[in-house]
Length: 285
Image (cartoon, rainbow, N blue to C red; front, side):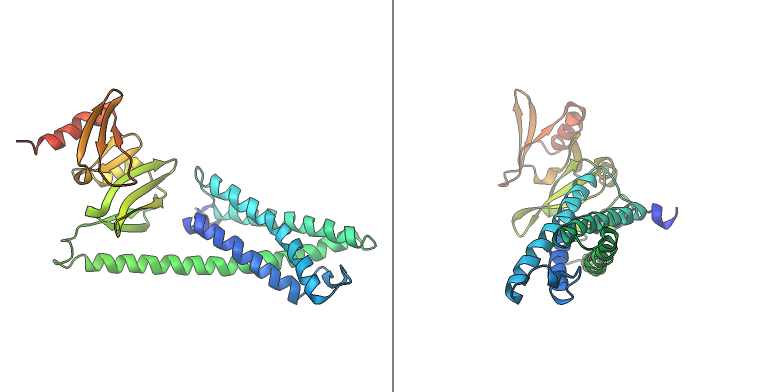
């Protein structure tokens, strides 16, 4: 597989990182246009420095809407699809062209005496700087942060080998490429929920119900937890049966109840009810 056909790291389209990218790009663009003054922007208005900053900031933020819309589309696209390096570079190129067109039309409207092609050429160069510089810095930061998180998780796993630390009561989760993503004490894990091509691991973090999203499947989780007390109970759920306090039969089915605020009752589908009930039956007197 060539480099351009490989999938980009998941941290590039995680929601929190997409928000950080947009904010950092907008901040960088504001500084860039007010210090460097590209597009001959100092001639746009015959106003004071303060008013120029306000006007130019509004224009830049309007152009940044291209990035905002693009990253929103990317976020929802990656819920069901992967993005390769080649596709990602084309995606960024389209963002640059779209923003360049916006600034070209705006500059031409203010100064129609200039040639349109000349304006577009200048706009493309400056827009590339506005986009590529913060994108590159953000990518390096996200990559560094991801490595730091992995090191911390590995250190936690090393600590877990200590007999006084939960007796190796740690569950590790990997993404579909086999890369380590997340670890949690088994006693704190509640259930795993299917979310298209992702899974949501629900767990207790200092008594608060929290969620961690990983690109993987429930089928893989079912295999990971084979012959343990973590079992599949529904096509959409894998549950830690140690956390279940009540099994309740309703008119529309059988439900598992954890008695933890914020955790819904999980239905047992007919496919898995016999296996689940057998597990609980071994503890009955």
